[in-house]
Length: 380
Image 1 (cartoon, helix red, strand yellow):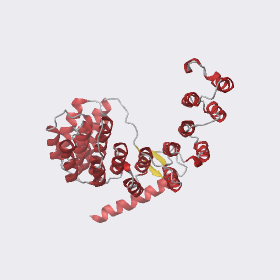
Image 2 (cartoon, one colour; image 1 turned 180 degrees about the vertical axis):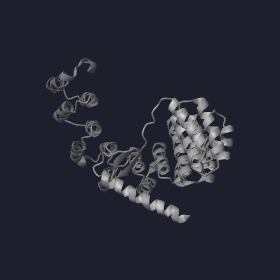
Image 3 (cartoon, one colour; image 1 turned 45 degrees about the vertical axis):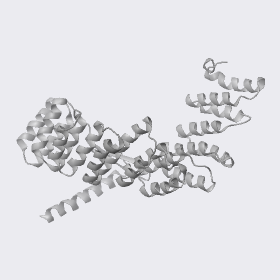
Image 4 (cartoon, one colour; image 1 turned 135 degrees about the vertical axis):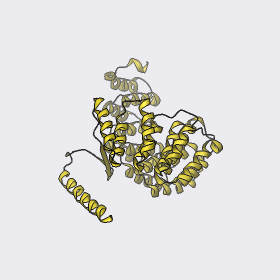
């Protein structure tokens, strides 16, 4: 009987019929359970799972993964408890991945410690999952501890693991370790090379935020020369941002002109933001005109140019830009900011009073603003 011929309401009946008329067919049953899980029929899948006379690693992994993806972590963890005696790394990896999917990265790391204590074999997926958790937490120390564990295994040069390690160090802003991790990877394949390209974006971005201009430029030069990685438009945008953040606006402008590919809005936008930061009206006006020629309706360009004029006291130019913005008859989306605290994300927008402690938050902001203003005037 074909699996596609069975409608969801009949799946449970077919499982019972399968065991009453035929010898156990574990592989087929696993396929049915997997299909049930993917269709969101977790209750029926669990019934089929419970009725299996013999469950394989695939059976356990499918159910744990299904519960994890649906946010039912407690049920997934309960199933894991039942498999502890089997020392199966696939199931444990699935549970750790489930924790991360549900933004419980610390729990994933704690589960790994139990995994080590029970001497359960660690695979490439184990380390890849955990390095991803460290990336989410921006935890350099935890990542370094895991890296020390990795070095003691044959997986230390595995391309699959190495890619996530590069990503982890990049997101933590540790460019030297990210570079070393990339260098230790052996036998790059096409999929890994694509991932490494993104890894270099992360490293260049980390250099940009850390102010490491020389290191970032050297890495950019080594990409193609030593690692045969052809820079993409994202890499060029990172370099422009790297130079711009340090006030090297003319150098960034010259870099764009010498690019072998045509600069897009992201590249020019990176330079415009740097012009805003350094209040360079001359370069900013030129970059804004370039962006207008590409898309005359980009609101952010008008806003940034207006802000530059305002700070420099060019009120006539500011009013002119604002009038052009009004002529577009579009509304600017309200800005927002966010902060992560105890693995929870809090988002705030203009005049937002949705937070239960908004009065206290606004009071603290007022206090900070007063102190900053007094410091500003005192410095003069």
